[in-house]
Image (cartoon, rainbow, N blue to C red):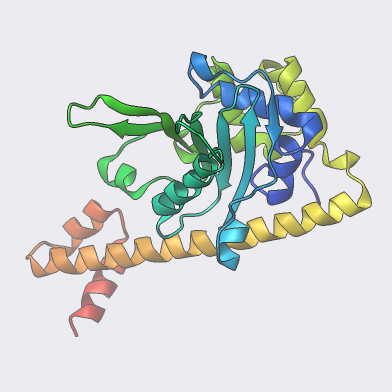
Length: 283
């Protein structure tokens, strides 16, 4: 049973909504909510290069689009569903390609157009979790020791969507609305009143699963299966990691002389689990 609207976190859904020429207005609208005034996009063209991951898991977890604005700025727009090893390293590595592509044979003064990497992430950075940082948008540029921007033509913008918690009633800006769409499009059965404006009417129209051809439906079904399988794997791994962490913490607290009921209350676990973990590990 399909949802009414396509899931943008699938490869098929992401490319259909934002990677096709008839819908580039959607991508422009979304990107302009993230960009400074001097780099607002009036038109863009898609480039053929895709900087996909090297492994099969990368290719299922990461979808990207590459485009260039009419004034020369380059954009890598990436949607990533799961944490990957060396994510920041890979993101930096891919940003070098649109830089190198600007080289001109012959007499060239090395002047470059701006390059933006935009990451739409269905996870949060570990350092955010540790520091209880709830920022949705992370805007990163090269800075010096005085925290002043050293080079403003290379920018990384990461959107940690799990931190976006606003309800329909709380959507005040166009950026809010785009973030809400990414998080909830596939859960909606109709267009909410707050999203009844031309850009989103166009998006919802493109996202209607009922309008897909049989071939498109099959492609979407395959893409949706990849998404669900990967989500199941990552959710399981996250839960197992959390459980292992709780077990380690319980044992450490017990070895430091803390009472079982205090341990259970502090870690928000049942008394039975706390007793079981401690007794199993200390046998």
